[in-house]
Length: 216
Image (tube, rainbow, N blue to C red; front, side, top):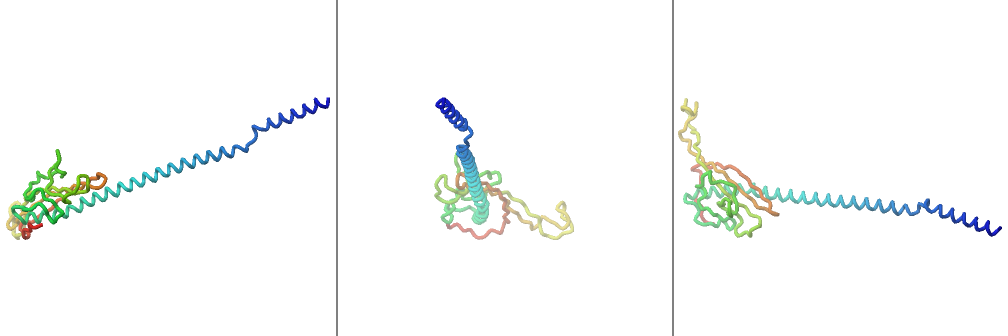
């Protein structure tokens, strides 16, 4: 009888122990830690990807600005070379200008405004360029192309008169001279296949050109 009670008592103790196992929460800490670790890993991945994207955007913006300002600044160079070309009535006799600029059209100052289109490298379907820089660039490397074309516009006179017909009071066509109005298009091919095209207008007063400088 005593043995039977002892066995029943031991059985109850085992049953209580086993019954307590599902309520043991010591393993839940590991699960919570793993969940937190997974969330943190996801956040780190998102932040890293966002940082990479922001860096790429900043890099692209820098390349764009670099290409644009190179094209914009090239218009000043085009105006100077145009003045030199106008000073030589027959145009240049040499293609190489200062070892930096290659002139394809030696008398480009005679171009009409209809000849001005978006410049290109002169390939299939592209507008031939009047000049470009730098000389000897490798295809795909940064370079700048130029096209120019102008038209003649007569300037109003400076004589003081009571009336000058349709010109109006105090104006006259006498001694007015003429201006050459040029359209200048510059195309800059920059890094990472970036491209920027700038159009500008330049006014040349006839008679103001200097001496012809045809040497490189």
